[in-house]
Amino acid sequence: MSDAVCISHQGVSPLVISLPHVGTELPAKIASQLTARARQVEDTDWHVDQLYAFAKDAGASWVAARYSRYVVDLNRPPDNASLYPGQATTGLVPTESFDGESLYEGLLPDAQELQARLSEYWAPYHAALQRHLANAVARHGYALLLDGHSIRSHVPRLFAGRLPDINLGTNDGASCLPHVIEAVTRVLQTQTAFSFVLNGRFKGGYITRHYGNPEASVSALQIELAQSSYMDEAGTAFEHARALPLIHTLQSIVFAMQSAAP
Image (cartoon, rainbow, N blue to C red; front, side):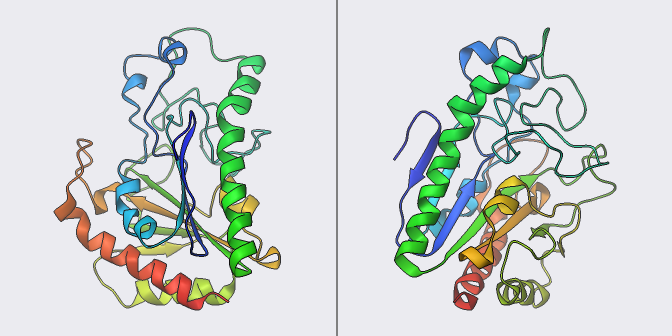
């Protein structure tokens, strides 16, 4: 199902895929306020929906953003509290790119505009996500939430050096059952194609931290991928042959999550 804010699909398995930063659309009014470079939406999580298409085909529920994170960041709390105090990051309604460049030609969005974007874009996405999680728990007794992301492998303003290929985030273990985390980690320890880290620079954003609650039968895992692991970061084109090894690894991760779950 597609609506004004997201693409939502009800699956039959306990797995729910959330893709809050794959959107590239910009409402005309907002686009007119942005710089020419900002309208290129460079900070998109390029092609993450294609990387996880296998999970949707296998019965996972699915929520994917249509609009760019420059409209509103669906992985930030509604009060705009920092998820990484003391570290550079971007806000609920970003005004700077990952590289620190202004996204706006003139005046920045005011408090009224921020509330309007929360209501029109942020709230419907989270309503869809909550619905899928509740349906999974009602059907299976539990839900597995995989929050999928990607980012350029080098963003000096946000992190030093090169990012590992696969970055797992569980809010330092609070968002996911320990044996699910262990199962996923074992998959990555037994392969050599991709580097990985658990709860490194990316520990999980608002979606992982807010919805991940094993005591309430929801285990949430964020996966932040370095885009160099599946595409040429100099462009935006998807290269299936190049991405295939990563897709196979993600398939193994998803299988491990589902096998280890209650």
